[in-house]
Length: 62
Image (spheres, rainbow, N blue to C red):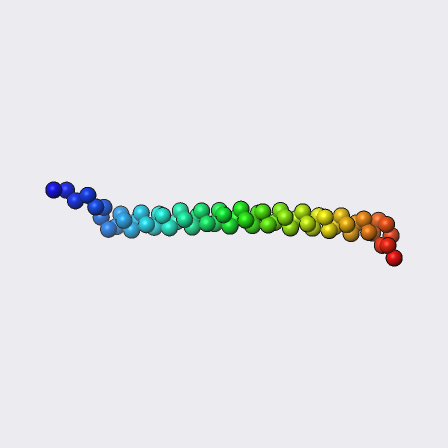
């Protein structure tokens, strides 16, 4: 009668691989979120700089 359960070492390796894969997926999501926030911030800064350029071009409005 053959034992069908994997040896404990293989089970630990499988669990470790699963943890690594989960960590990589979480890191990828965090990177995507950071890139999205960066793009939003960059767009807002471009709008703000354009508005300041417009004020300066009109002589400061004062």
